[in-house]
Length: 307
Ligand SMILES: [Zn+2]
Image 1 (tube, helix red, strand yellow):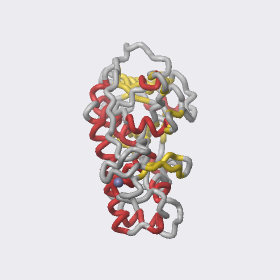
Image 2 (cartoon, rainbow, N blue to C red):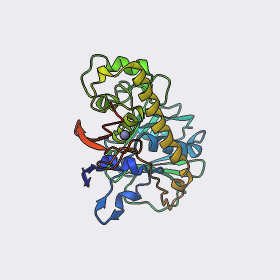
Image 3 (tube, helix red, strand yellow):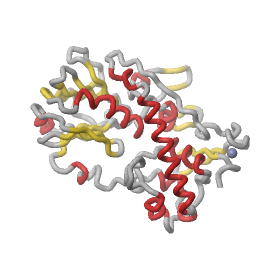
C-alpha cells in the first residue's frame, strides 16, 4: 500500500473522492505522491447512475473480453449475454448488477477500475479489459490497471450468489437502522469503528466515512460497541447516511465528465471534519484532533467532542 505522509493510500482516494472513477488519477503524480484511487460505495453508485442511461433497456450486441485475467477469470459463458437486453441495473455494496433474461452481469471495480462510455471506434487504452457494445451505439469499457475488478455472469438469483449473500444491509436502505446496529453491537467489546466497517453489519462504510460519521455522532471510535446506547447508535446511523449521501450527491454534479471519451475527471474534495487532520483544531471546539490506529487503519477523532 502506498503511503503518503502516513495516510493509507486506500483512504486517501476516499478523501479525494473522485466522482467519476476515471483512473487517470492513478497515473497522475504530484511531487511526493502516487495516489491509488479505489472506488468506494459513493463512486460505484455514481458510476451506476452515469452508465445506466446507455445500458438499461438496450441490447448487448457484442461482449469483448480483451484480457480475462481479472480477480476471477472472466467466464466464457459471458458471451451468452450477446443479444440480451439489459432490463435493469442496481448496486449491491460495491457490486454493479445488470440484469438480462439470460442472467446477471456482475461488475466490480476492484482497487483501480473504472467504467466509461465511448463510441466503439475509440482507440483502446492499455488496461481496457472488458467491454459491451450496445445497440445504443455506445460501448461500455472496464478499465482496470491492477486487475482486481471482476466481470462475471450469474445465472441464478444474484443476491444468493456467494459474493453477495452474506453482506449486511445497504447503509442508505431501510434495513440499516439503530435497532439492527444495536443487535450487531450487543455484547461486543470491539471498537465501534471496527463494527461499522464490518460488511456483515453494514456495507460500504470505508475508513474515512467511519471516522467522519463517528465525529458527527459524537462517539469515540475506540468505544466498545456494546457500550454505545441506542439513541447514540441512532445518531450514528443518521451520520453514516449523511456522509455517504452527500458524497454521492457531490459525485452526481460531475457525472457528465466521466462519460466523455477524453475523460478528464472533475475531482471533488470533501470537506473533512477529522480525517487526516491530526494536530489540527477541531472545527467545533478547537481541541487538537488525535490520531490512533484501530484494526491497522488510521483513525482520527476529537478527544473533547467524542465520548
Ligand atoms: Zn471537538
